[in-house]
Image (cartoon, rainbow, N blue to C red; front, side, top):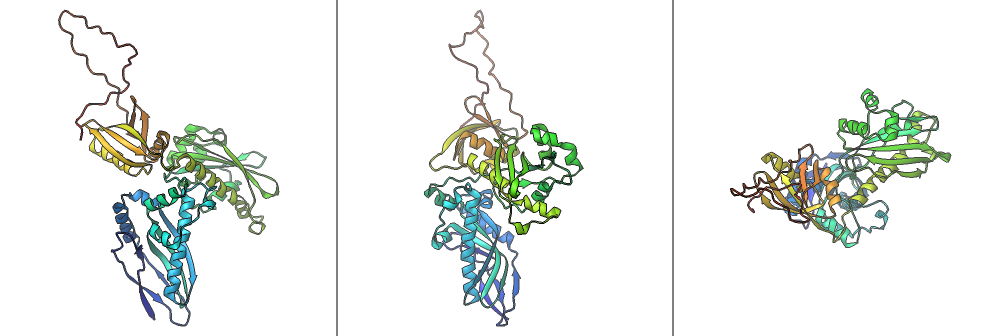
Length: 445
């Protein structure tokens, strides 16, 4: 059996500073018989390590790099030799991966207008790739790959074309799939094919992770159909927390004529209650339908995918990074332990709308920090919520705390004792007010 040396497994792209880390593997090629030989590479840990090196050199974070990594890219190429087919497959896979990344970051209405770069430009945007699985013959290469892209390079690519994009990943949201066929709304009942469609539809990795409830006894206990229809925030919050989600998304489906489905979608939770979006979705191809329960679920699959797209687009529009818009937000961070400070600092480092932050002043009790934000204060608040951080108004600026952390009680300095024989009554200056929060003093670092 013949073999050839490849960069197989993990491949840093040319032109990047960590490309000197060469990793080689032997991929087996079949003889002229034309039979396939399957080769699977398991190099995820090393691939992640190389990408982390690249991210650290480029000033990015591991969290940012995960957003800019595209997995499960299927390739299939034919050429005059195995190596030529492989190189062609890599180039095609890289282009496919960047297209998927653009769809992840950019609102769906804008995606068709984004022209992808040339192969050379595209190679410069890539940090490297991992071969998850591959099969080769004398003239054909079939595989599945993961591609990692340079966050700074992709940002420049989109910004140069005037394309707004989002890169803040939401905490998971819990889907509440309601179906109204005219005979009364269904939620946990067995005859709800819309809930089955959510359970069976594969949802791609985007900026909003979706959690589909089991529909078990605990779900029936925690949320009634009436509570779901009414958007009961307390009941939804309890159930979302049980599933490790932050917000809930109420999706109500109504069958319409000719197989179409009308959906109404609303996100409810700490990230903010959005407006209800209503849209009618065309039915799937007739050949995919049947009279079985599974066929009923398939009928609602396009409605599921469109509901996902609506939620994703709404999130992106609320968190767009626009070229030239950078604002400074000053926050006071109460510190009750070193662990608390390190956790908050890590959260800031993983909040992608924060381009940088400067610790202006620090004492044992608090830190004064300037955040440079690609957006406004509301975008910052929503982004920090996804890192389990809260941004609340303070005295002139903001207070930044972890979720569940108590906000310090406002304090006033003790007045000095007046000299003997004088009145201790003072009159405030006209128009002056007492601050609601007084940061403790400290030395500039």
